[in-house]
Amino acid sequence: MKTVLLSIPKSLNSTIEFIRNLVQVILELLLRLINAGIAGINYNTYDSLDNFFDGFDEQIASCKANNAEKAAIYIASAVARASNDYWNNILSNGPSSPVPGTWTQYLNSSYWPVNYNNLSAWVGASYLENWRGPLHFKQ
Image (tube, rainbow, N blue to C red; front, side):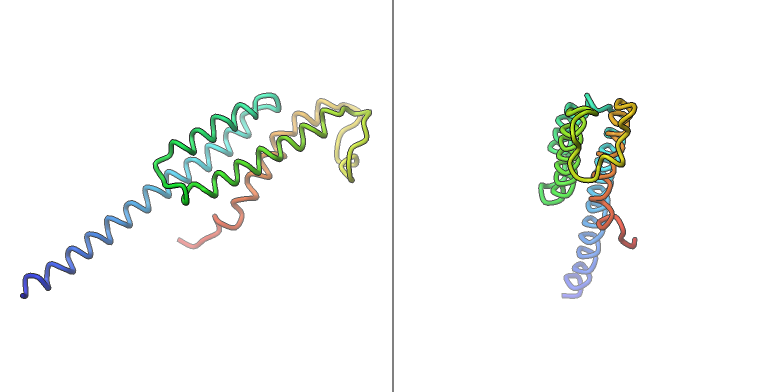
């Protein structure tokens, strides 16, 4: 009987340690994906962001974490993709078209291509904003 009682805590401790290590590995995978998203958005230009998002979604899908763990990254990617579509739609109208809302005061109407150069920063900001809450946890 003593051996059984003594082996349960050892088994329990090793199980807890295994779970901790597994969680650490999954967190590292997810953080690498989050950072890949940030780097990819910053590296790409307005005309290559769509291709980046397609490849990034494939990276998320092939990650070894389960779908529940990847959900936040999928959501952040979808928000950034929607932001990219939104800004491309506004900028594709050109400087002579009326810009919806109050964006006209922030867009450069005298040299329109500057706005395209800023697009990845705007898309990156929408991606990063998704992580403001989830990444502010104590370790």
